[in-house]
Length: 454
Length: 176
Image 1 (cartoon, rainbow over the protein chains, first blue to last red):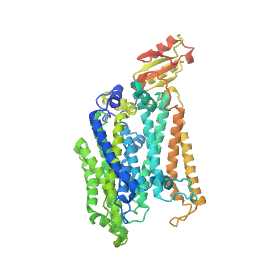
Image 2: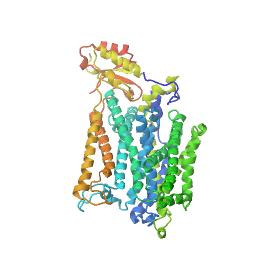
Image 3: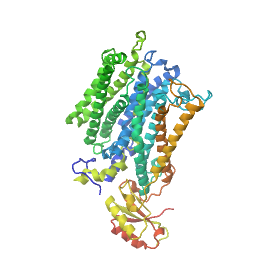
Image 4: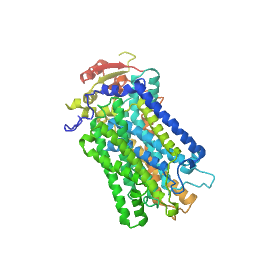
C-alpha cells in the first residue's frame, strides 16, 4: 500500500476512476474542434500573420527597422528575449524540481506547463536570431563551426555564446523530457482510436506497450532527466543574467543578478502557467484535476518568488548606495526618478506589491483574482527587464550621448509575432495532445483521490 | 492445448491485487511473460524480480563524454588552434569554459540516456507492439503468461491460479 496522509486534501476530486481519467483527457483530442477553438486559433494565426510582416521587414531591411540607436543598442529585442525565456522556466521547474521533491500535485499541470516552456523558448529564440541581422549566417557566429578564416572560432569567453549553448540545451532537453512523458498517453489514444487516428497516434506513441519493464526504464529515465534538468533550469537564467552581469555597465555589473533572475523567471513562469491553466481547466472542464488546491499552491510559489524579487530590488538599490560608486548610485536614482520612472513604478507595483495580495486566502483561492494577478505579474516582469536594460543604457558615460529609446512599429510587430506564434502552438497542443499527463495522474490517483480517502 | 493459443492473460483491476497475484503465480512455479499496466506501479519490479535498470550508468558515461568533449574542444580552439587575447585574459581561461562544459555534459547525458532507453525498450515510430488488451493503456493491468515457457504446468491449472489470485477475466491471446 502507498502511504497516504489523511490530513492532506485529495489531488483529484470528483471520485474519478482510472477510466474517467482516460475519458476526461482523451475526449478533447478525439472530439471535432469546436467553434470556440477555431476562433481562438484563427485569432492567433492572424496575430502571427500580422507580426510576420514585421519579421520580414526586419530581415529584408535590416535591424535598422527597430527603434535602437547608438546609445541604446539593446532594448525591446533583448527585453522580450529575457521575458520569454523567463516564462519558459516554470514548465521544467514543475516537472523536474517538483518530481525530485516528490510533489505529486505536479502531475496534473506538468504536461501543459512543459508545453508552454517549449513554446516560450521558441519565441525567445526569435529575438537573438533576428538581431543577428543575417540569420542565415548565424550558425557561424553562434556555433564552433570550421570556417575559411583560420578557423576563427567563436569566443568561449563570452556569456552570449554560453547563452547559445544554455538555451539550445535547455530547449532540446525539455523537449525530450516532455516527449518521453507523452509516449504512454499517445498509446492510450492509439488504443481508443480507429482508422487514420490510430496510425498517427500509433506512430507518435513509438510502439509503447505498457510493460512493467518499459515502465521501470521510463521511471528511471524520468528521474535522471529530472536530476539533469534541475541544475539546467537554474543554469539557463543564470547564464542569461551573465549577459548583463559580466559587463561593466552601471546597473548591470552586479553579483546579485543570477539568483535574482532565476527567482524572477520562476515568478513569471508560474504566472503564465496560471494564466493558461485557468482558461484550459475552464474550457475543458478539468476542475477535478486542476483544483483550487493546485492554484493555491502555485500562488504560494508566486508569493515566495515575488518576494525574493522584491528583496533583490531593494538590495540592489542599497548596494548601489553602499558601494560609493557614483555612476552606480546615479544609475539607480535615475531608474526610479529619471525619465523612465513610470516603467520603474509599474515594475514595483506589479512585481512587489501585487503578489503580496496572495497572502489573503480569499484572493489566492479565487480563480478570477488569480487570473487577473497572473497577467499583472507578467506585465511587471516585462517592465523589470525593460528597466534593467534601457535605463542602464540610456544614460551613457558622456552626457552628450544621452538618449531615449522609442520602439518602432517593427519592434511592436516582432513582439506581436511571438505572441501569435506562442498561442498558435499552444492551441494546437491543446487540441491534438492530451493536456494532462494521464499515466502520471493515474499513478497518484489511488493515494490521493477523494474516492479512496473517504 | 489449442495450437493457436500462445498466451494466457489475467486481467486485474487493482494494483494491490495485482502485486499479490504476481507473488502467488510465481510461487506456484509459473513463469510470468510480462505484466502490462496503464501507469507505473510502485514496487512492481521487486515483485517480478527485475533488476534495477542500468540506464543511470549510461547517463553517467554519456555525461562524462560530454564533459571531456566540451573541455577538449574549448582548450583546443582557444589555447592551441587560434590563441587570441580577449580582454587581457589567459588563453586558457578555465573558469570561462565551465558554463559550456556544464551544458554539453547535460546535453550528452540526457540524449545518450534517452537514446539507450529508446533502443532497449524498442521505441520507434514504426514499432508494432504486441497489444495483449486494448484496456492496458486505459484502466486494466494484464499479466501475460507464455504457454510455451510453462509446458510443465497444465493450461487449466494456469487459468485456475490466475482466477484464484484475483483476476477479473482470464483470456487467451495469440499473435501471428
